[in-house]
Amino acid sequence: MNISVEDAARHLQKRFSDAPGLVNTMAFFDASGPFIRVLVDPSYWRAAGTVPRQFEGYRVVTERRAIGVADRLH
Image (cartoon, one colour):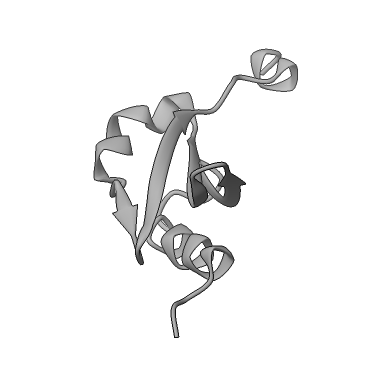
């Protein structure tokens, strides 16, 4: 039995435990099937090269997280 995309996203998130809050993973579904979406904080973007393109049989899409208004105030 294959692992669910939700569980795969959780397992991938654990790989980034050294960067809490800088990398988030989510399970997504589109017309081509399930995939894992990885949102990376702009300050951690250079390390995004360590994110695999496929994990546990699911494709992985890496995106730079948008800076929120609250983030700009600090």
